[in-house]
Image 1 (tube, rainbow, N blue to C red):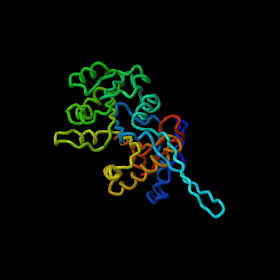
Image 2: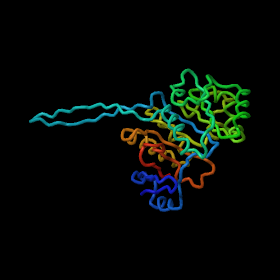
Image 3: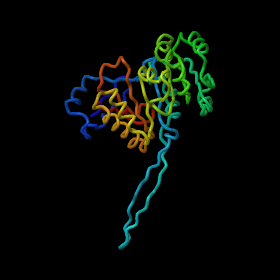
Image 4: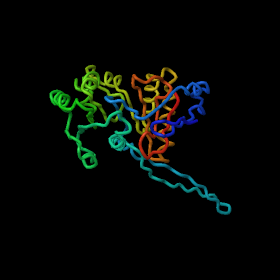
Length: 288
């Protein structure tokens, strides 16, 4: 089953979680009242890109059996496929901002820890800032850029971002009032820290999450799925994540799952997507 987006002329596949027994035919029938269009993200918004180091590459093993007379010989061919890691997804977001966001950004500030990952080479208009900005600097930017949509990116600064009042203030107050979209690139969804840490507050107020491929802690997605979809949602989100990052990655270079939880969504049946960027083939959605 597929739905066509009238604004983008792109098709939406409903990948068959039904074949895994995760949704019923009745659920699919009720989807007829849901209309999904680009853009995906309403400015200002907040987004977390999450995944382990090196998630942008995947090893795929192909086994072939050759029968020669009475002997059976097994050959293993190892192929290295490149899929989207955190930095690649961040670059795609900036390249596709005209299509994915309601309004493109007039200013993008890139805050980084040790390395810029070559971001300034591909996006020469980026404003670079090493380290976490001070509260005074944040307020200065808010006053200076808030007339038009703008964006601030925190790359590998999650400990500093979550551990200070800056993160909590940006995600709950400043983002909405000063027209700023916040993108945080981090390694783990659940940040450990002190009781004064703003991690939980930030996560609860984040509208969108993009997860890259991970083999280590799949329980994260079960826990996150239950929080978003109820007690039975853990397995649904886990299966969608495995399908999006494993079977899709080798085919077309995607290998990530988008979870969109914007409060303006009028339904809870279509929250999970992959293939949202240009050149990745048909947009794929997972029924929940």
